[in-house]
Image (cartoon, rainbow, N blue to C red; front, side, top):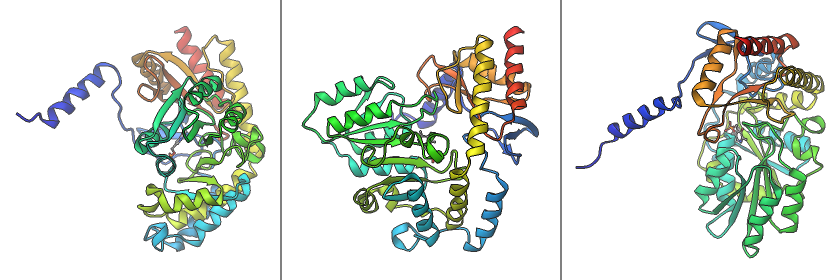
Length: 388
Ligand SMILES: *Cc1c(COP(=O)(O)O)cnc(C)c1O
């Protein structure tokens, strides 16, 4: 007899529940910057990627309002009449900001990674990736049918060993710049030197570095002095520090022409709403000039780290807004998140498979929208739980 889908799904669901790995949506209501409203209750939001506090910035709300005259949708894909002057202007302004020859907009970071990796790689190519790279990078290499080899986290020597095994194959070395669940920064200068030595290309995903790190928020690659010559495939997302939605790939004219012609997640999808692109132009300008926000963010990071280290908490080595508090057990991480929520702090527990087995954690993420008092409230709540 043919096995039944519903029975298989029920089986998987009950296994998730037994292992404290079941996930559930929570509905958030409108809230001020730095806050989240869940079940009608306002909490300090330590769960967002809105590092500069731009997502609900008054100037961006106003930009969105005045862009409303462009209408709701792009009506078509980029290649079939959907490529609006707002998209082109946003691409040019981003290219000027990050110092790349050309930039291409995608619907999301996930789509950008899948489209780019499948456009560059086939089954003859080698794709060498950090073990903790974001799911979209791993999925893109798999979808491309490339030989995917993962190396020990942030270990350039391990990456070198993998590349050395197949010197005759075209190879793409891929890394997050700031790791999304750990907050540490990849050894980008070493990876760039390795790629150069091995005649490989380097692709860096700046989802969590762009807007936050580097001169004028240009990202972790720029902070390491790397540009298009060292990082020929640069990826950034508009949904994190830039406070909006969408993503870009930056590179040479040749790379971008290749993507326009062969990245399936670019070709076979509707362009971003032009009004959103228009508002993102203002977000780019704000993020570029957000020195005060970056300074406030650095202060919040320093305050949290100092207070938690003094309290004996095990914080991972991170200087970025992503501050994971390692717990280990999934049920314990959920319980800690629930206890903090009862104290007014939203710090979501992150469990496998988002993180490796046995490494459940609270992913505390800080924002320029937080005040010193917000951080102090989180620290006091953690302290209370430690003692109680
Ligand atoms: C969020 C994220 C993405 C995906 O970007 P979206 O625009 O949200 O699809 C890609 N890479 C990393 C490292 C991310 O954190």
